[in-house]
Amino acid sequence: MISVTILGAGNVATHLFKAFQKTEQVSVKQWYNRHLNPIKAFKTDVDIIDNFNQLKEADLYILAVSDDAIKSISQKLPFENRLVVHTSGSVSLYDIDKKNRRGVFYPLQTFSKEATIDFANVPLCIEAIKSEDYHTLKNLAISIGSPTKRVNSDQRRVLHLAAVFVNNFTNQLYRIGHEITESEGAEFDVLKPLILETAKKVQELSPYMAQTGPAKRHDKKTIKKHLKLLNNNPHHKAIYELLTESIQITHGRKKL
Amino acid sequence: MISVTILGAGNVATHLFKAFQKTEQVSVKQWYNRHLNPIKAFKTDVDIIDNFNQLKEADLYILAVSDDAIKSISQKLPFENRLVVHTSGSVSLYDIDKKNRRGVFYPLQTFSKEATIDFANVPLCIEAIKSEDYHTLKNLAISIGSPTKRVNSDQRRVLHLAAVFVNNFTNQLYRIGHEITESEGAEFDVLKPLILETAKKVQELSPYMAQTGPAKRHDKKTIKKHLKLLNNNPHHKAIYELLTESIQITHGRKKL
Image: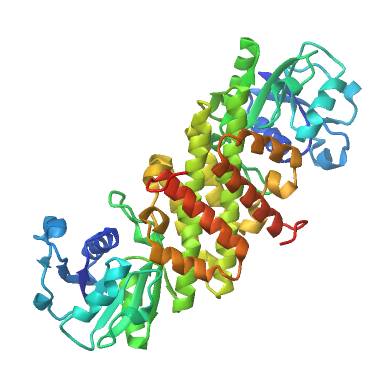
């Protein structure tokens, strides 16, 4: 049994709390937030607190707070030599105040408040200085059914950056697809099976092998037609040109 | 029972042939290609030909050939007033020679030679001039289990353009994710659940509602860190900047 105290009330904090509740291998000791209001719905399930001095001993403390708050909250913790981890992809482990044992427990997934999360689909990227702390974090991940990956700070930073490309930027390409189809009264819905298949394809095949389309084929005629259709939106056109160029750099016949 | 003759030997032709073989509602009369070699593996299943003069009567002829070949092949067909369709997203219906009845049967999906295709996940965008031809094409799609959508040429053109964004360009973002993670010895595999979840999310939610991340939050600190990591690759950096800007245009606080 691992005892955990959560600090923060955002999506990651809430989804972790719910996942910990479901397993008997984890006991959530306390849930801290600077305002009790966002977590008061859980007060019958867990000891909710808004004062650092009320913090009791736990095996680990998870700072599931905004990147900017990690450093200052870790400094305010009124204890020493306990395991304190954050959940951020881009903040250094060393931002956590060194009076405690430090670690990172970074879930590489997109969370929204409403959606239910199956942690079997949430890889947990783990970083710790001490081997015993690494094993505590690994066991915690396993107890909620998550695959785990030991990553150092540099690897975590590039994973977070790559996540922005494959998640936020990809989603923006979906958005542009939505705008383009609606502009002619076509339906975005027709694109949904293609969106899903594109994501499924790279589960087995490398993105390099999975690529198709006019950019890879250097099909100048189709590219020209597309650019003409985009004439009324210079920003979409710039994205089309830049990503076409990027594909052609990847697949040869065009040099940087 | 609909009788069909396929012309061409690419991915679309091959996958359509296999789908037609599986249903009793369709009979593939002949399969034409200018060289017999690519289709000779199917010669026990279907009459394979390489000469237009061998073409027999069928309910429809599907030109599943490259965009550039549609016009000239349609001109060479030695018959009139039959239903001739192409499968392209970007070629006009009027590229088909007017001596025949014309239509489009455009499967909006990504095809690779190896992968098996479930046509239930392949929306068929149908265009025809005559109502009876539209119904023939719709029945053909239904017989292989595909959802159908009647679209005009303008709508098909923007769907094809949008498909490039959500498929080819998205796949290139996966590729960049692959390059970025491998540069630090991190594993692309860790990103796969996120890629899948990003695609699943917009099956229910609009891409607008599904967006998260540093660009949308105007999290300048994280964006700055990411740009610094991309300093060694100006092309990836340009894509990061342009798509960040695009997200901020979509989600306000930044004007075009």
